[in-house]
Image (cartoon, rainbow, N blue to C red):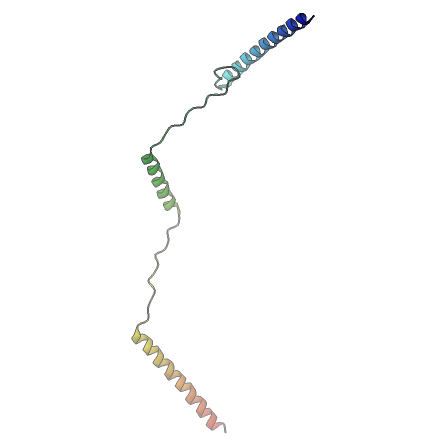
Length: 117
């Protein structure tokens, strides 16, 4: 009795495997019609293309070109004007003019105080 069950299960397994093979063949045909590359083996992982290597000099050239493009795209900074400095003679002239004005203000107040009494 067990042998009959085992043979039946093995036959069912073989039948299922044939169905899987047929389905995978049909899927491969559809992928081919769509332009999708098929896998080497049924159920195998898709192959991964290795990436090309680039030399350090090549990376440096690419980086320099990108920095140049970035610099050209950014707005240019305006040149900074040198800060103006006050000379000692100029400062002395301003101090003298300020003292003269304040002397005039004090004199005016003094005259106003005398005439107001």
